[in-house]
Length: 201
Image 1 (tube, rainbow, N blue to C red):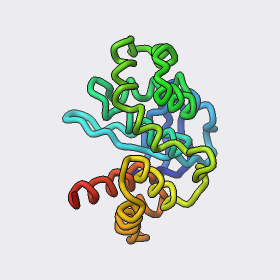
Image 2 (tube, one colour; image 1 turned 90 degrees about the vertical axis):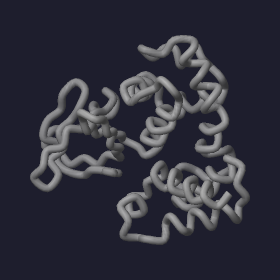
Image 3 (tube, one colour; image 1 turned 30 degrees about the horizontal axis):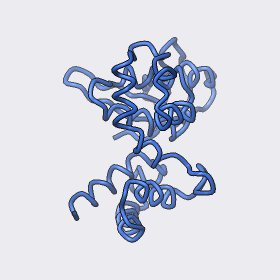
């Protein structure tokens, strides 16, 4: 899993950028909004997720970890692949997407090409509760809160006790040399914690 990339922007196209990382040019698919923030010849740092298919390896990049988490989350819904997930984030900012899912606003979701009414309703049905758990709650841990606190809050929102959440988070973040731990990759660490908790149930 390539959790993040940092390097010099070698090229920018309509749907991707090439990031030179240690002499290797990585093609990173991204939204127009993310691409517009890059400058050729300058350094860039993107949160990334690698989508593996039988005939391809595609790297997707995001300006924030929040966007990456949502990109991965919406793909848990049947019929939603990386193309539609990226389109959602191209049309809607992460906060707007989260708000639409949590509030059941199918009209907002349907602004995205490839999302019809049935798809929008399925997204809301399957993600309404999950996306609320990942969102910073009013008075709760802000986006800048330590990663462990954000993970514990997300797991608690999914129904686990504070003790269960804290123990699982402590386990998955114990190795400081792990790439996901070092990068503070909430999406990867949350999935690992859920896997641990699933085995213990």
